[in-house]
Image (cartoon, rainbow over all chains, first blue to last red; front, side, top):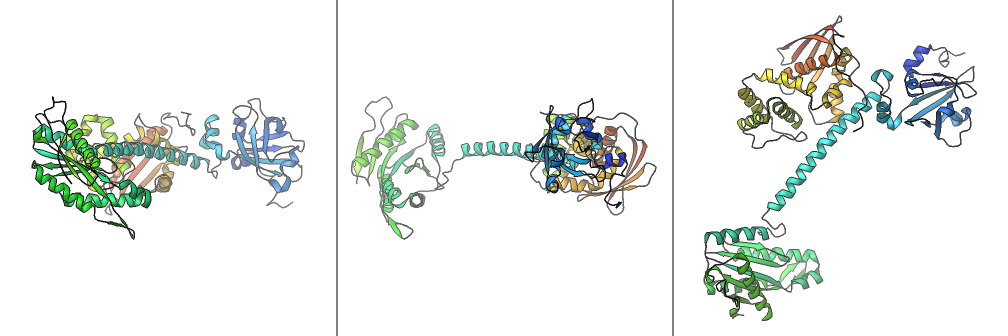
Amino acid sequence: MNATTDITNLSASALDRLMPMHLIVSPAGLVIRTGPTLAKLLPSSGAEGGDLFDLMEVVRPTRVCCIADLCADGGAALHLRLRDHPRTRFKGLAVQLPGSGGYLVNLSFGIAVADAVRDHTLTQSDFADTDLTVEMLYLIEAKTAVMNESRNLNLRLQSARIDAEEKAFTDTLTGLRNRRAMDHVLACLLGQGARFALMHLDLDYFKDVNDSFGHAAGDRVLQVVASVLIAETRSADTVARIGGDEFVIIFDRQEDPSALTAIAERIIERLEQPIAVSDRSCRISGSAGIVISTHYVSPTADLMLADADAALYASKHDGRGCVTLGEGLPAAASDRAKPSERSA
Amino acid sequence: MHGLVNRSIQCFLSDTYGAEVWTDVADGAALGFDRFEALLSYDDALTSRVLLSAADRLEKSVEVLLEDLGTYLVSNAGSDGLRRLLRFGGVSFVDFLHSLSELEDRVRLAMPDLAMPVLSIDDHANGHFTLNCQFEHAGFGPVIVGMLRAMADDYGALVVLHHQETDTGCDEIRIDLLDAGFSNGRSFALGVPAA
């Protein structure tokens, strides 16, 4: 017999070292011998002498009736499972031994290796030195640690981002200040008792642009509007986009009604210029309502915003594209915020 | 410097000496933040500033601090992770020493961007070894000394270590293994208990 193919002459200890999870099975399917690591997984009474199929079920290939079927088709990959708890899964390969007609079945844990090692409290010396199980376990543990660290970092970054967004004062589409920034500026000015004016501007016909040209065109129009508002105001003024097509401008130390009306009219005039959006031309306009802090005995943000809003709607009511100056009255007065002066 | 190195230094200082000491060290190093992230990268200068600030605050040499850091990384009660990863290197302390030659490859599998020292072990027989360490940043040799000491304890081995820097800027650590079975050491199971 050819010495290079006959392994039956291997000593038992050599076989155990090379394949600590092997089985030798008789032609009748009885377990003759188990490798030392596999023995740890089997009933303490010992598996030797028992039927292999009483010990394990064959998950794949299906319809295996006898031990010879395990080597059929040149020995396809076997998927086996312990019948007893914890029903450990194995990958395996069976070959027929020369001479006796018995079988050598070698097993490994496959993908369930980490569970199996834990369930059976196996150690490094339970694996052949050529086996990559220990490297696999090392890698699982190292990668798990890195993944946990990565998940925690992501959670911290996410909460920092939410935090930053909540604190952000900028409208990302237009680069103008946002509602939160406007509230902040207004509260500061009122707290200082500063003299200022507040203009509420609402675009006219903007919905038509969105409907007929699409939202990308609408966004482009809002950016053009923002650049007009920045160009027509001073750096000390606050220009905020507080809603879809709603803007508030706070004019620092500006309380002259006719100057304010002139600024508003100039803005509206510029908004009415055609805006080119990808080969097409959009037309919008704007309506404005203005209130002045010095017109109030005790101005508050809510009061001034409500009055500016009422003045704005008076402008809308007047046929759009115009400015209304709301006149503040003492907070106690019930008939405040009646538009008193208009200009088209 | 990799965030993992910086984060290790931070955890070592705050676990060993208290959160207040870490805050003092961070202030002394003018970090501008109070927490290193293990998965981010930082300017090398920050690491040097933190080490100098810690040495100043604790009135110890940087070398002593780094050796204590090495011991802490393996043996601190709060985290078993690194000790376990190192124990995968071998069944005995001698196996472990030999596995250090492939430490760089092992680390690269887990964290490809972490620059590791190139380690090579010479076995002079009869329990005498020399470990050569080539670091990207000089001066970290004492960390390896501290880790080796802690790993010897972990395996229950009694060793004597001598550390010196060579003319070429390498760290050379002589390891004399006096008794491989000096104590029981700490247990190590391959499998992690289910959480």
